[in-house]
Amino acid sequence: MLLNVESGFHRFSGWYNPAKYHFAGCTLLPGQQKTGDIVKKLKHLFENNVQWANEISEKSPNFFGDLSKQQHPEILWIGCADSRVPANQIVNLPPGEVFVHRNIANVVVHSDLNCLSVIQYAVEVLKVKHIIVCGHYGCGGVKASMEDEDHGLIDNWLCHIKDVRRFNNSELEGLNESERFDRMCELNVIEQVANVRNTSIVRNAWKAGAELSVHGWIYNINNGILQDLDVCVTGLEG
Ligand code: CO
Image (cartoon, rainbow, N blue to C red; front, side, top):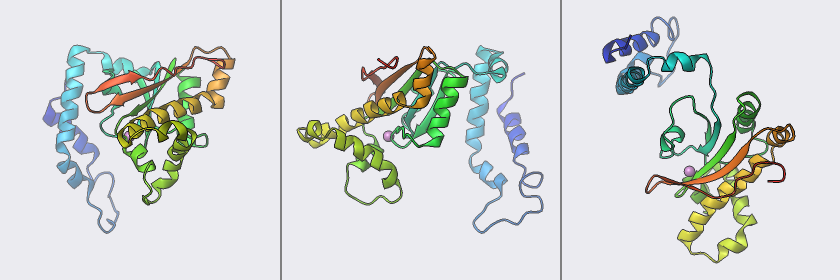
């Protein structure tokens, strides 16, 4: 049975009833608002959600029921946190098809337990067949890494991209500013593909004979088009 927008919203507002759940007997902190007030401001998101869920259920009545039992994505997507590069939408895939990790400038750091845990779960439990590192032109993280200004804490993260610039300095030196920015976005993807390939998780999967490819793609935020950077690796020798 489908939800209508109002009943759907009321169902969710029930979850967020402050008296019943979150704030019973609690004192609000300075600046803290009751959850119910915040939900009212974001009501349109719950309305969108019910409409979206209904549209899917109308087309495929068992969609959510089947998906709730288990997930079988074949793709792990490692992308930038940028709001203009939403993984599922740009490859037009529904829920359940893509396991996703996103961070500033799609960086894969050898000691990042967050990213490594995602890769481990995707490879060892979900047994994905493809890991896609997807960067994008116009990436703010890449741009910030190319500047000398102080950006605060994030500069520690951006150091990983500064390394990419250092590794490729001879190629980048000959380019103008705009070309250098575009190429840095591409080189950052290529470097992160190498980092994925070098993880113990991926190497062990290959040693065990897993069918697993690591791809480097870049997305153009100006026209919505993806491009394969043709740096795919499929094994220890690939
Ligand atoms: Co970005």
